[in-house]
Length: 145
Image 1: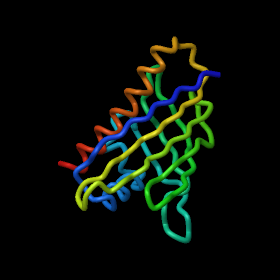
Image 2: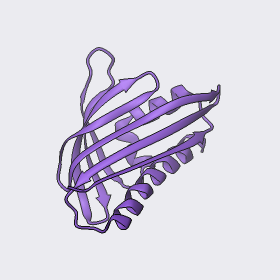
Image 3: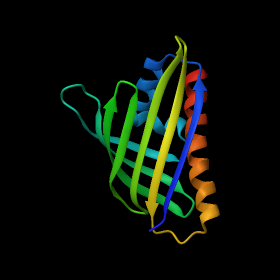
Image 4: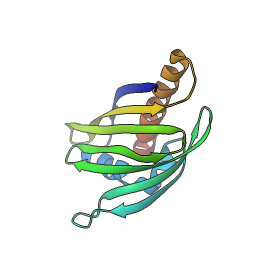
């Protein structure tokens, strides 16, 4: 089963708390992640009201994918694993935030996707790197506009 991974870091002119609030606002993700067509928060953690699970519809190279993610939260970011998917057989991801200054935050986005798509490795590599780049660019544009 093919597995593809990409990691990228970007600096965003926004306080860490604002960046963290934005990535945790699951239902706003279609506003700043071009590939996300729909995002629905399914459950929150009762103790802190943070996202626990969410369902997504996203555009993919080979069609539209639907998947459900489970979230874990930390003071410096958020991570997830896929519970179920249509085109993907697994997904793990993480945003790690570091304050560079009071109004500037470094964001590292790590994404791993498992799937059964019969695409050549160089195409799969280009696709996942493009997903990570467009997500970070969208986040930066959303927060700096």
